[in-house]
Image (cartoon, rainbow, N blue to C red; front, top):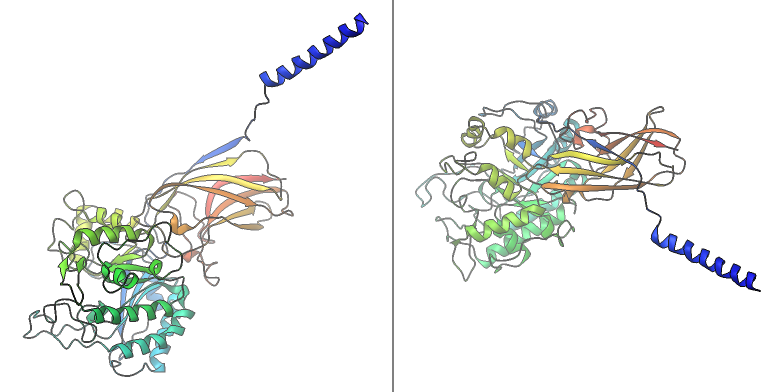
Length: 511
């Protein structure tokens, strides 16, 4: 019995010792081995879709000059603009169509056919269009307060404008793949919604402000345009207050809130309205861009501080661009440090600018040494910093995970949605497997961020070595296989001209 009890005690002691061992020496988790790839920054300028300096192609419908495919292909290569002392790559064409002769009647089929052919030409050339329609670009001088421009201005009444938008709607819907964005246009000289015979004249030629009815009529046109375009495309308005008065009503205060992360890119009207400033850094308030134009019960006043802050906050989530127009606002419109040109573009999230007007301003940027930075940083500019990948082979049918550290060195994120894909190419057979990465490229804002890639590979993926690529093609099916519509990373030796893929400089073994 003593021997039995003694053995029992020893057994319990041994068990207790084993348990203590487990507690005192837990099993340590060893993470999978990884490889880190560090990428080399490229300082080159190159073409990238939906951003940068644009070329202007203006036409009167009474003497229609169709877009030239070869000319637009040439614009994609590095060349000088008219009156410019700098060279640039252009993937955007500003197409201003002047509907002269149609201020009182519907558009003819010939006009509609010509517009349709322009979309086809842009597609063939590998570019996208910033489109605007207006009725006059002529400033008729005379004995009026403004002097250089006097009424009647020559735009069209609301019923005609709405009729023309209705006629254009099928073309806009069918050709949205090559529409980068649309500018509101239609109202006033140059389509800038200012000098107008029918929608209010806030200049000294008119009432010096806008009434409730003026705002209501403008809002009706903007609503028609938003409905005419697919939900995937944005419309630019000329001033920040035009958006406020559309979203919040004709008596909305200038303190009305901007978009936030919570309501951006949700397809709502508010999320689809951006800005085109056609007098960028031209005066203390950019020639009225940041004015409060009043309404029936309030006067016009300067509201630079609050509307500039609103535009900066809202522009983070919408399309922003425009043109310079006057070089007298100097040194403010110069390069840093005497001026603030790049700072202003970054704060307001500029994606594009006119290359042809006003080159008194643009040429200064070349002479002063900041043009190279502006050319590269308008819109987005994505730079791979490093990637952390699994080192050991990965089994087909399981999840492949890795991280990419990316910097958007540009002033803005992309304003149109597009897929982000992982391409896995078998190095022996060249067979490719394509996986969508869960991310919204429109939220790749300026600065550093980490893209976490997690994809479940096909069960039947053949064993072998696979080269990895990042692909950011156009969202339109008919453009998604065209490399000129894919986004190129600003890194050395990653871009594949033939495919539009960006090599991640990493091979993964699949077993």
